[in-house]
Length: 352
Image (cartoon, rainbow, N blue to C red; front, side, top):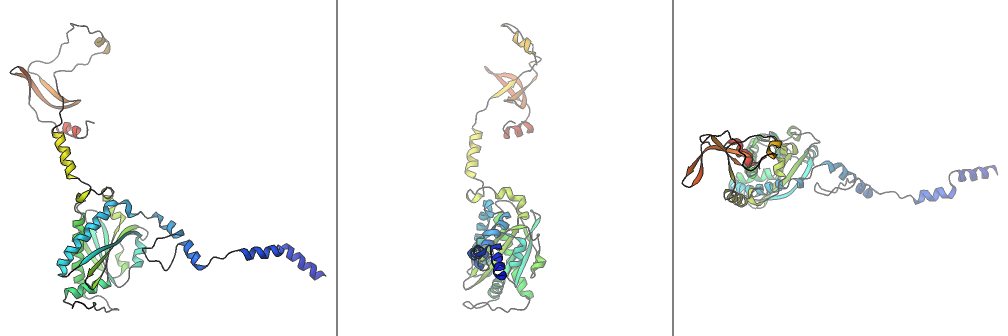
């Protein structure tokens, strides 16, 4: 009886059958649901859309879409590279833009598939660095094309060895061609000289920014008939900061934000605009009480003589000086001084 009473008390203390049914009703998440909640799916590629907690972590990254002009620059780079690489390889080359994305610099270094060659270059006018990564497939394809490899056969890949001097020199020449095209792509927006600094094969020696810094990653695909590979151009946001205002402007034709037709129309209208020019003989300051006492027939004595200089004004802005005279039946003013620089500056700024 004592054992039965103890068992009954123990059951009632822990909720009896209610506790057992509550535990049975609790739903346990499986591994797929946990990955979806956290946003870490090992099956997703770099281009997959992030969800869950990982999306919150990466929300601090600035989207490249906030810099609309940058996409136009890279589209121009693709067209320039297609022509220059055809001349460089004497082969049929097709360059395509895979995608433009934002990424943290440390994450990108960890995602580089090795072996690869990393070219560190300096943007002189922007006073910062960028990174150009050439993957292994493109390296062997360029070497094969430039050294007369047969068409229709895949480039021979020999893994497990460092790149030879010949391979590095040939890749360096291709990188210099790409950097020259990048300079031409930015030229309509702002002059930037991209100079190759060094070539690295270890990502740890190509650290040009802090691991947590955000950067723009541009993935380009280069196809030479049955051969090819990928080039990745990485520009930290710190590099683009000096020209950020230019990259924020909207695209208007091939002139990158400038419309020559509108500029010409505006200049034509300005040249034909009529303005009122006033010749001021003299100025006096009078108290308001004296002005209110003026009557018809009163005379104001001016401190000007027939030979005194007068001031020519456009509204409140003094433009130049001259002397009063007569030409035929008209009163005339002979300008005796050039238009002042200060007046021209104020006129161009709207008379402020």
